[in-house]
Image 1 (cartoon, helix red, strand yellow):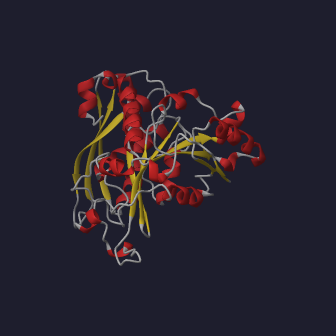
Image 2: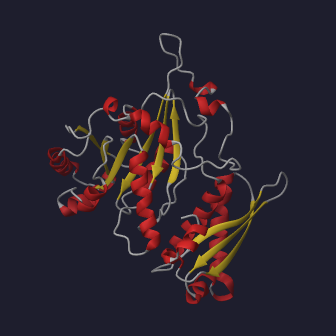
Image 3: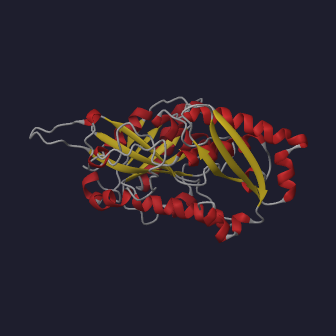
Length: 357
């Protein structure tokens, strides 16, 4: 289900200042040369890898490359959508809202087009300093991107009888790049004919260039979304090798996988008071890789809950996380987890900086 939305405010790909955006987007998430997920081949910087040799009529190679911001309220399926597009589990996904805290970069390369997706934290009203930093990530990504995907929960929209969201409207103020409305979770809609009137309401408001209804979970109409986005990519050499899925270090993904398990295993405030940092990461040609990580909480009572009686809860976390890490790395892993208390770390600027926020 794809719909054209006539909007003078967003314009066309040719009128969006894409040259400046192209210069900025490579700095949005800095690559780590030591990462196992980074291919440090010089040809990736000029877009001339063997798998993407598109040639124009004049004999010159022609490529398109741009950055796509994925934004929306918590738990609307932003991370699921990016994972589906990439065919890989890069962004952690749980039923709990606010799972994503930092920007996650994913790279989709097909033929002559490379799209750099940035999965952002869910838009919310910040209650503490860490959440204010999360919202800064959203605003920064909006300013750096060539096109913006606003993800809306179809089920929630039907419940509210509207896709209009004042909080999203506020975040989009000043955004001059094309904005695509993506209505997600169509697999949960029993009467799809109820959706077009809500799309029409958004069209009349004139904020969006186009709209598409998808199911990220079932990978339905995601190709239609990619086709739309490709039309907004500026001419540019590839910024990354065509085989590369992300520029983020493997340490980042390992920490996220541990945190994903914690979100699934614990209730109430425990997941939101927890952060994970990898303190040791040793690859081995023979034998298991050695990985050690610190789990930070804010109170001693939280530490006791995560460890559990006889360390049973921590062992459960470690076993589940190790399996996911091994699947991600394609190698056997020896995983050590340590639980430490950092009082009120979510409101402490110095501690947040040390944790990478």
